[in-house]
Length: 202
Image (cartoon, rainbow, N blue to C red):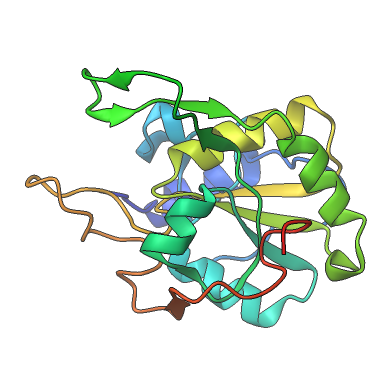
């Protein structure tokens, strides 16, 4: 379950959080998240984190900020996606040639080799005109953190926030994703994939 920073920790974390680039200022958040409250898999080099609930508010108020969904097209198609998402650019893909991962109880995924190029192409498009900050969303915050690492390593010049609870959210003790996340916050989402959501593929 995502936990939020106490006021004292909040001030400290905002003061210490580095920017991914000089493109924009750190966003003012209603529910800031301190890195020490996150699992290692959700932490990023930029150290910028946002909840899905805050992401919705930021997107409504800041035209320079865009939400990028890095889940697979299958997830978007079958589970739904945030209507506020500017683009679906998967950081990983399901490879049917790979074996079942019995330890994790899932089919293996592989990095999308075109991910960084696709993000750069989208940023250079008319659809992203004026955008200098990306909120990166996956299922629950770990894949998006890994995606941010790839973008940082490639030198992509935008400010990068990890949406730490993602679209579906974290699991409860029973394994159900009902704790947090975009969908559980009652934010607008849909199953109907709009034209252009997956740049270059529709």
